[in-house]
Length: 424
Ligand SMILES: NC(=O)c1ccc[n+]([C@@H]2O[C@H](COP(=O)([O-])OP(=O)(O)OC[C@H]3O[C@@H](n4cnc5c(N)ncnc54)[C@H](O)[C@@H]3O)[C@@H](O)[C@H]2O)c1
Image (cartoon, rainbow, N blue to C red; front, side):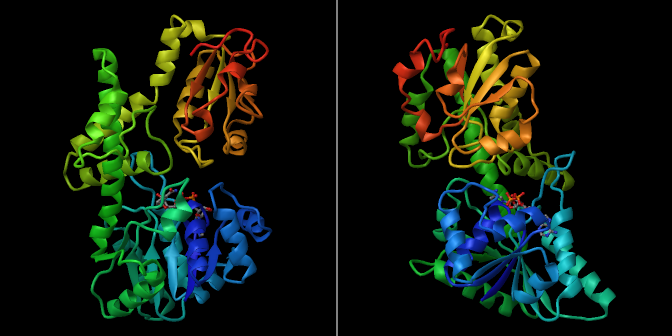
C-alpha cells in the first residue's frame, strides 16, 4: 500500500520504517528541512535501538522516502497518517495546532478519497475537529470529496519502539460509521495485516473510545508509578524496604511486576503531558479527576526527591554551593536519548540554583544534553561514566541504564577519579 506519514519524530519515523519493513511504500514528510535533509543522507534525528538499520535497509530497497513536500505526500498515500506533536499548552490542555495544520494541508491538495489516520495522542473529540477542518477546506475549494478520519493511537515505548511497533500488544483502530467507513475499515485491515499473522491484534471501536483508550493507558501506567513512589516514600519513613514490598505485591497476578519500580518520577514526552491533558479534558466536561491530579502532584514532588536527599546529606541546601555532583543518566529512561521532562533536568537545574557544579554522562543523550544545556555554566559533559566522577563529591544515578547497574567500584574509588571521595 502507499502510505504517507506527516511528522518524522519518534512516532512518525518508527512507524514509517516499520510499515516499509513489512512491504508498504512509505513517504515520511516533515516541516523541519534539516531533519529531512539529514534523513536523506542516512542521519537519524533520534537514537532508538534497531531503527538505523531498518531505515537504511528500507531506503535502499526503495520503500521509504523522506520529503518536505506536503503536496507530494498527499498525492502518494491512500492512507495519510498524522504523527505530529501535541505538546501541553499552558493550561495543561493538548495543543492541537500541528494536528489540525496537517489535516488542513491534506485537504488543500487531495484529489481522491483519503483515509486520514491520527496517530498523535489527542483529546477525545479531535478527530471530529479534524474532520470539520478537512470538510471546510474542501468546501472552500469547491471539490466535495469523500474522506474518513480514523483514530489509531500509538503505544510504542521509546527505547523499545521498533520491537513494539513490529510486535504490538494491540492495534487500536477507531472508525465511526459513514458512507465510506467500510472502505476505511478494509484499508486499515490491509495495512496492519502483516502484524496480525500470528494472532489478531486489531481492536476496532468508535473514534472517541479509541482516543480515550490512549489516555487511559498512559494514565494507568503513570498511576502505577506514582502509587509506587508514594509507597516508597512511606516505606522510607516506616523502616520498610520498598524493594521487598515490590516483590511482595508484584507476585499477585492482579497487580503484576510491570511499572511498579519506585524512582525519581516519570518523565518523557508522554506521561506528564497526557495526564495533564486528561485532567483538563475532564474539567471541560465538568468532572473533577481527583486521582489523576494526585498522580501528577506526586510526580512533581518526586522529581525533587533526589535533590532533597542530596541537600540533606550535605547538611542543607546552602552547603551544596561549590560542590561537584556527578550525574549518571540524563535521558528520561534507558535506551533513548529523549530528555523531555527528564527527572535529571529537575535535579540539575536545582543543583545549579544552589551553586553546585554538575559533571554528567549518559550513554545516548550527550548530544541532546549539549543541545539543551550547551551554554549552561556549571555543567561539564563527560566522555564516560568514570570521567564524570573526577573530583566529584557525590554521584546521583538518574537513569537505570544497564551499564550503571554493575559499575567497577574499585575504579570508582581510585583517588585519581574522586580525590574528594564520592558519597554514596
Ligand atoms: N514519543 C513517544 O514515545 C510516543 C508514543 C506514543 C504516542 N506519542 C504521541 O505521538 C505524537 C508525536 O510524538 P513524537 O514523540 O513522535 O513527536 P516529535 O516531536 O518527536 O515529532 C513530531 C514531528 O512532527 C513534525 N511536524 C510538526 N508539524 C508538522 C506538519 N505540519 N507537517 C509535517 N510534520 C510536522 C515536527 O517537525 C517533528 O519532527 C504525540 O502526540 C505524542 O504524544 C508519542
